[in-house]
Image 1 (cartoon, each protein chain N blue to C red):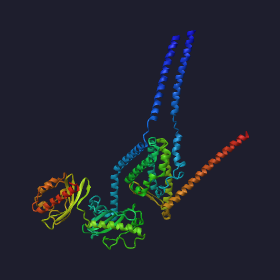
Image 2 (image 1 turned 30 degrees about the vertical axis):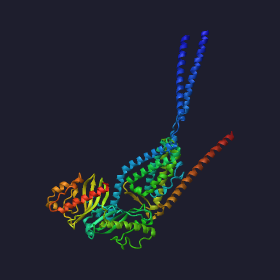
Image 3 (image 1 turned 180 degrees about the vertical axis):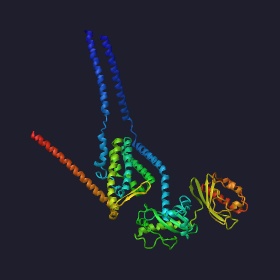
Image 4 (image 1 turned 90 degrees about the horizontal axis):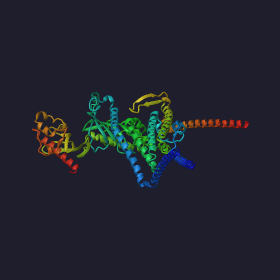
Length: 270
Length: 368
């Protein structure tokens, strides 16, 4: 009996030790889990990052950033495409680079580092354009260099790339660039059609005219290809966009209110 | 049974204790690491910031240098093409004989003192065009960069026609690039028509008077254009002579301009360029010669002929000693007595003297 007692006591003790060991193991595991929570990537989240830049956070129409290159580069669709590609290149690579070095760069000197990275990319674009698309380079001239101080690039570097992963930053850059290009093309289309009476496409690599379609040449308003026309056209596009956004928001609010009212009525009825 | 159970339990206890101790030791190690990291003195900002900024700048500079290395020849070729296009535009594409030179043009030398001339080409025109403009025997195309006007400079293309080395007039001109001269005059330059036969001399006007309508700023630009064109005409007429001595380095060859008169032949002198590399003479380019027997404007060291004397006189020994464009002729060769060409003693001695004095210029340039 006494042996049995001892035995049971030992067993109880040992089981306690086992339990405690297990519990420490569990706690260790649980601390591991709490230290590094598993990141569940939602495809919708990434898609949202991409699409936000196109419409919801459109750099030109919503944030009103990067307006400086808009006016000189929207005199023709050709120039608009050139500027869009240049901005896409710089924004895409600057976002990727800045996102990948965000943990190494001390926050005190982050802005000079961003500027150096962006300036390098702009110089590369400039050299490449000068070598391969000379006519386009001459058309855009100083505004290519001015991409260095473009608020969109620096804004996205500071607001997004420096806080998010490389993948997300790349998607953000693509979204923002597409949104930027979209607005540039819309403004350029109206300015070129009204200002010259049609559309002319030039091969950016050779400088040769690919095709000219000027059915309204006699009714052209040349002032539209000057800065004044840029302001007017952009103002109109911005107005239309804001009206549509407001109308859309209004409709959503009304729908929500209706749903709330219906819910309240339903509750009151009960 | 009880002993077996005891053993089992003991075993389990020891293994679990071991595992627990392992885990705790791991945690301890981690904590030690964290402690170490915490106690480790962080790098001073005075060191860290320059390191980060310096590395970023170095990588950026490397990237730009790489891209520049790749694009530089393409950009240079584009500029050359642009210059050629402007020339074709000025003279008419159909009027240039593209079977001669490189696409109808051959590069001409420019004295280094002619600072407004970027490029100079001799233009080969078709026989039809030449006969239609029989008053001009030579056409030269100049790419000019004007002195500073209102804000910057203008890149111009102009054709100077006439008899090369004697008399020339402006045939036509056009602006290639006015971006740095962002002024009213630059805008007007696109539409101007020059006065035919502008000589560049005092009292002659580049444009018809009263044409410039946009006031003083435009006039400043036009004055700059006028200055550059005047220089092109002077170079065409041979009025701008290079200063004696080192001119430039091209393809690794140092080019020296020199003049020499043959003392025993009072009426004989010649001017030219000597190409030197690694203390060897590779080429002598005679620009002008005054009755020098055997000169005939040939680059003789570069395999050129020694004038009509070549056929008549014993030229072989002279040629064997001094003519070697591929490997160059060492400076030492010129220090010994020259090999005379029978019947052209003074002229051959003159050539060797010309090279000797150029070698002295080389030594002066290199402080030897």
